[in-house]
Amino acid sequence: MVTAKDWVRRFALPESWFQPVYGFVADVAIQSVNPVNRNRVLWASRLDAEKRLDILLGIAKLMPDTHFDVYGTRVLDVAPDSSIGRLGKLPNVTLHGRYEGIHSLPVEFFFVFCYTTQCDGMPNVLLEAVAAGLPVVAPDRGGIRDFISNETGWLIPHHTDISAYVRTLYEIRDNPAEAQLRWTQARDLLAKRHSYEVFCRSLTATYEREC
Image 1 (cartoon, rainbow, N blue to C red):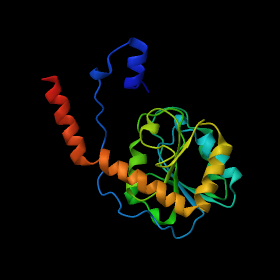
Image 2 (cartoon, one colour):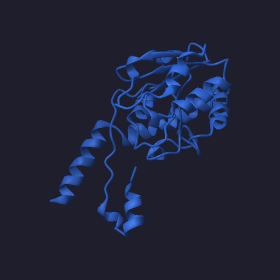
Image 3 (cartoon, rainbow, N blue to C red):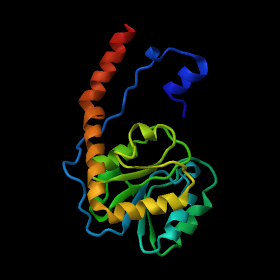
Image 4 (spheres, rainbow, N blue to C red):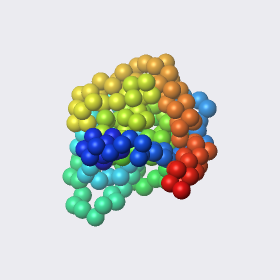
């Protein structure tokens, strides 16, 4: 992903040329999820290679006491990732297939949303997860750090660091008060920057600036 900061740095363009317009989500939860149990992790995205299902596979292997519910289907017309089949063979992983947004899922069964990826922009699924009441752990790739930080969730510095994911997931599971705090800060940022009203104002300001 090429960001505005990349353009400024690479081509010496003025920062004033760029105006971010953040995506929006609706129906933000007032409270975080109070999970039915604390040993289920939600993962949801495209089942394509850049989502690094091999990383998820490694995490699940090292956490046999934790169940991983995986939602999504392949989107890109390329050879299937062999990790999908291996994930489905693990006793602590359930592959659920297609889903219609995070709010369509039984979020009350999960204590965290875990996201793996090799490259990304600002994944809308992370906004949806927080809006649904779930704390988030995600890698520091692309534009993810614009929303997820160590104040609003858990940011994994190196996206291939399986052990860091494992340590972090156990930390979240064992510290529900900290999970609540970071989710609350993520929810506040979501309401401040990713509401429909803010989105409309940003578009209006951008068009007015161009005129």
